[in-house]
Image 1 (cartoon, rainbow, N blue to C red):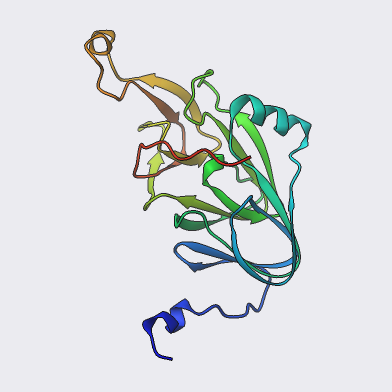
Image 2: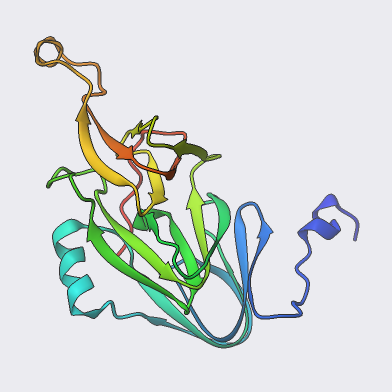
Length: 224
């Protein structure tokens, strides 16, 4: 049988070591020898002896999730084998987190991560109770985290001399050491006249970076 479908770039190979890697730009392959965590429903294929079970979030994170709606419904993947994770053909990226690093990520952008990472749902400081995903998950520890993004993300450096302002519906994540607050870029008079559609942004200050997706459209809420 002949087809470009069977090109070597599309063929899944056996892995030589445990851990995650990009199968392609839309899918992450995770070779499991023990356990890892992934968003519920993200597994598209697997081979080997693997189990998929809903992961409890602990009382604190569960209560925060009920209040905030922050979507980080996880499953534990355990055993020995290979699993492929994807979500609605979004682009996939792998982030290596080392001790001392801290990355804030919107739960809707988490695909899977190593068991050595710790996450905590936290309120974005200075953002009050405004919506738009302002309760995010902070990842620390040591390991790899796979994030997804609708389209090709924009990574914008933040420096003390150049704070960055981002739409709360477009932000994917940022360096956790950055200071956050809400910024109003529209006058009261403009709002009375109908507004520009860009009334309030998340302001990030300090030294680090922010990741933005190229769309302001609100994503479909994550399933519980």
